[in-house]
Length: 274
Ligand code: LIP
Image 1: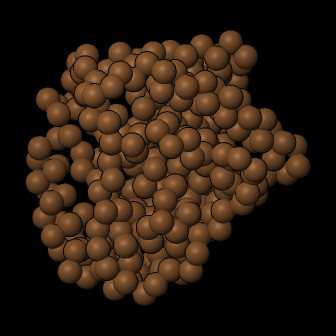
Image 2: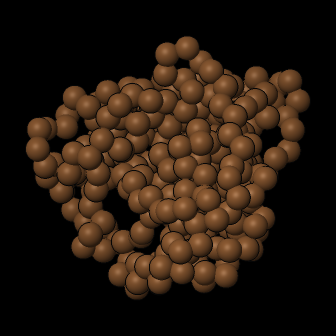
């Protein structure tokens, strides 16, 4: 992920974009809370595979976010998980996951999030993530740090990690059966070489947990940009390093760890054939 330092005007612009993401994200989180019935949520359709659900509430959340942001900034672009893509002309593009952790949402496991990132000229400059179920919030601006935003705003600095053999590693599995099988083989290689693995079910929350120090490292293959754009900035602004297999994080691989162990962890991930 790029780490260019913005000037004062650039930083003010990033904070302004974060402010809009926070407003729209909180409103969407409220919608998701209000509309979620007790028990299991009905799946409206499936996407990339039979296990990849979309609900009417995902769609409503994405529409709300798009309407709020593009009403205020009609020249911006928009890319969302549920396909509401809009080409913009301003150089700013919003990257939105209206519910990250949809399977958790469907089952009522309290780990699903609204995630909103702003990219300027292709670079993520602001990101907001809210865990809908417990209302914890994370925000970051490029060059301005990572912060918890629920309650009083407070900076986040990822704590010093243990040695690689002591890392608690978050991971996830995609919806494509073949990719899952490969992920399972890689995790089987990684597991004996670290403290343990966690699969919590929402990539955005995994990356915020990395920033917070609730886990020490993260690796996943097959993520879409809306899964990691906002939370990836939270993690890097908190002092972590994010990488892809060779270069920037991408659909092939997203891995992250505290800067102190990043290179060693990334080498281990590569050795495990992720
Ligand atoms: C999901 C994640 C999950 C990951 C899946 C998927 P969705 O996003 O965040 O942790 O393992 O690959 O991308 O579909 O719930 O928005």
